[in-house]
Length: 95
Image 1 (cartoon, rainbow, N blue to C red):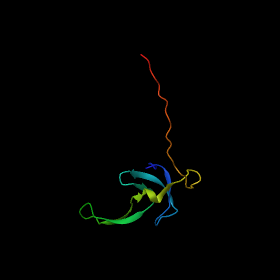
Image 2: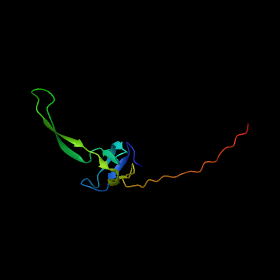
Image 3: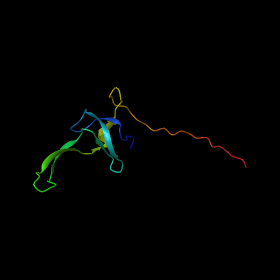
Image 4: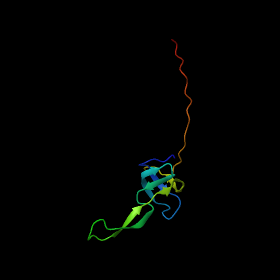
């Protein structure tokens, strides 16, 4: 996964297409990321104490990495990320 925590991303597919946000958490084994303010769903929460009412909470849920693209920090436009393998020279030591 080329995307990490605290990266700015733009959503390229789904109901939140076009929105941007910061990655709060990454789940590499599931290929999902949790983005701030994206993929919010309403969830019912039971009361935790006696006499307290249950409530409806809006919670962010993970989104698949393929629906997210890395965005530039200043321009907020999509940027591509690649990996480069550098050749390392071996150093011979003599005893």
